[in-house]
Amino acid sequence: MAITLLLLLCFVISAADGSRIVGGRESAPHSRPYMASLQSRGSHFCGGALVRADFVVTAAHCPTPDRVVLGAHSLRDNEQTKQVFRVVRAFRHPDYNMLLNDIKLLKLDRSAQLTPAVQTIPIGPGTPITGRQCLTAGWGYIDNNRKSPDKLQEIDVFIINQRTCQTRWPFLAQSMICAMPTGAFRGFCNGDSGGPLVCDGGVAGVVSFSGRICGDSTTPDVYTRVSSFRDWITRVLNTDGSRIVGGREAAPHSRPYMASLQSRGRNFCGGALVRADFVVTAAHCDSSGPYTVVLGAHSLSASEPTKQEFSVIRSIPHPAYDGDMNDIMLLKLNGSAQLSEAVQVIALKSGRLRTGSQCVTAGWGDVGDNRTLATKLQEVGVTTLSQQECRKRWGQVPISRTMVCGVGAHTLQGFCSGDSGGPLVCDRAAAGVVSFSGRRCGDPKTPDVYTRISSFTDWITEVLRSN
Ligand SMILES: *[C@@H]1O[C@H](CO)[C@@H](O)[C@H](O)[C@H]1NC(C)=O
Ligand SMILES: *[C@@H]1O[C@H](CO)[C@@H](O)[C@H](O)[C@H]1NC(C)=O
Image (cartoon, rainbow, N blue to C red; front, side, top):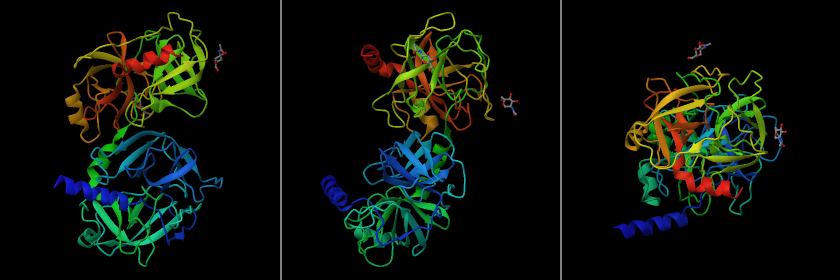
């Protein structure tokens, strides 16, 4: 039985050759304003759809991109409508396996500005019925000779009955949906993967796989059925960045290891000084633009004589950071900080962190869900949770051993967007790095999640030694 299944899968994998649109037409410019282009090293490789101003849905088999481009019609042209984003976190479906559960959500580094060329599209309410006309679009190859289009292509497709589709794809699961264009040699092909199947104005599917010959008229194209993942999507969309809520102002300079990462004078992430010339922060705080690291601050707006400002000569994100796991980064400063009462190095926590440890986290992020920025350093007490309890509360969002979870003593206490990268301090040592939290800041149903520093001691030691 296992062997048969394996053989079948091998056959399927060799037969399934990704996806690109053949026999389609060029879309009217910006008529599909939800379309996202996933790019790495400047090249488009997968599509996606903007389902919230800061979230794109795509296929799990698409690697996490360097950048996401919205508002494009032509990939090459320098269009004013384009908006470019980094991915701060990728949520691959936890049960993704080969062709099953082929769905992923990408959290963008900020919310897209909604314009006529950039719009969100809702998740389709249900499953489209057999024969329903839908549409799929993408920038993938337009023929079997691997010719790539520059402009967005689209094609009308019709939903195929599950039983009929199973005659071609015997392993077809309920969480997949099949569709085909009319006429031979039409359909999607490699490069349109991850793009949406749009029915009745909502996303009903995500382009997953197709036959070996693009648009082969005997082989329906297969999409991930989005309605099967509604609960998971809702849960992930309710997961968000981090800022401190319900905290208190820290005593001035009582946390002398705190670093503020600033871009154009605005704090966007925190960090901790671990050597006079090194700061530890979150990998998702990596910024392509120029930024500075400010040490010795209490109030960000006041001009304090204790402040020391540095630029970053090398940012070293963990090599296995994938937009999700291993969310840790080291920053080498352009000089050594002068240690003073307001600027000190913090030790790294070695060894086990017991469940129920009383810790503190601090930052200059927002102080409430109304997104007001704090100018003075805020701090909040945190109690660590067991791995099991954290996994239970987060449900389908995967929590790994290299993460540690914590909650505030009261409800609606915790961190929120803007405190990312700041330290979790337990026993006077840095035990974690603020990674992510629930959408409602400080909600105990979604405990705050930190990167566990002790899982990365060897890596940190090696980087510090060789730099
Ligand atoms: C380091 O960078 C900061 C900010 O860009 C600058 O003010 C400072 O002079 C630099 N220090 C050294 C030692 O180059
Ligand atoms: C924003 O939230 C903070 C903290 O909850 C509160 O003190 C402040 O009054 C709020 N500001 C506005 C404008 O609602």
